[in-house]
Length: 201
Ligand SMILES: [Zn+2]
Image (cartoon, rainbow, N blue to C red; front, top):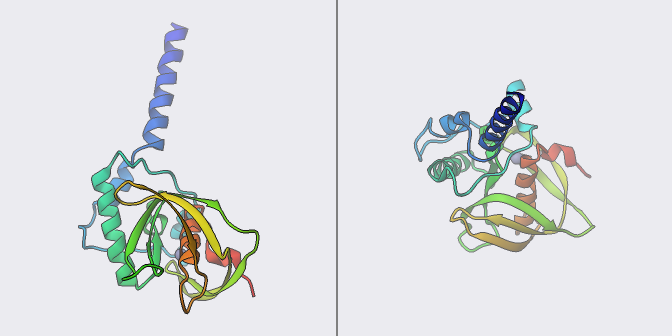
């Protein structure tokens, strides 16, 4: 009897773990499906106490083979949000979805397309850092400051078609190309880190 209860308990633990760590939660699905593909999300702000707690949390991995429709809608709505806010990047936690995903304007590519970055990893970077001028964040109203960044990074992630990408991003000049800085700023959001944690002179 004891063994049976123990096995049942283990099954419950395993099922709970799988449902938490893999697919999107029901709350996440509800939030994503609250609007259509051309409706923006509300952007979470550090000036709101509840929002700021969410913005400080670490995000979870996305299972690319699950919730494909919801993920597509999330990306579409984040693109609308980014355009409405006139930004160059926005991360999923900024719209209340604590998942490892962001979209960025590829200022380093012709036509500057907006691309989704899913489950990113920074695989290498130099030891040196640069002080990037006038960083800003859609979640921190009316604030800008210089932030410490790597001048280049080598990254791995999945694009919105599920293809694995490995590339080197460089560019840390606001006037010219600052693709590497945009990536680092958004990547930090997935760790609960904001640019105001990295200020420099
Ligand atoms: Zn930001």
